[in-house]
Length: 230
Image (cartoon, rainbow, N blue to C red; front, side, top):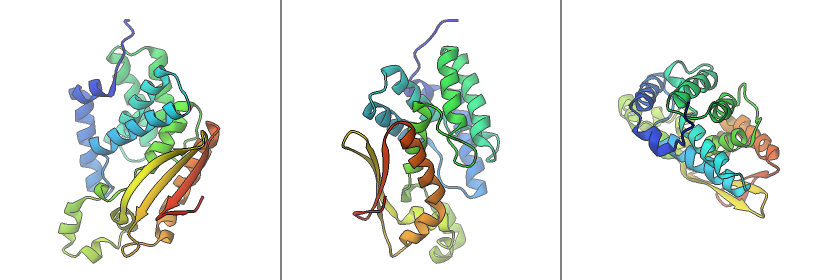
């Protein structure tokens, strides 16, 4: 088997990968989850690579991290439950089929299988970077606009706390300070949701991100509306 260098650009051109992403979006829209399309996957891929660059990972690790970021939610094509584990297996098969070395595909499988806070844990630099990048994508563009239209009332629509928090998130990005600190910087419209609402659904994800940062010898910080909370 020839060991091939794959990139996210290659995955975006792969019809099988794109078919699975499309099915993922179809299922999650029916279930009422936020957007998990190419937008989210591309952001997570980019941020995973950025984190790995920040900690001086090797070019190989950076590339594998970006691939893991792009494929991390593909298991939702099977079922939302245990999507990290099913996605890990799907990703391994897709990547080796496309010529990626078994060792590289296995590292990506490991990272994807551990990215969900319910059952995962940071077990490698790639997995830690993926965890932080994934949990950092909180933004109003992830809210499905058609659900608001279908409800007929925006206030009724915003009774769902996940929609409310994401709708209120006007900006989110990662900052890197002092050589060992990764900060999630959020701007939240408090007329739509409170900071308490954010922590109600994101506390476990924030704790997971802190654990991931510690694994790569970094501190995880949280800034909301200019106020540092962690």
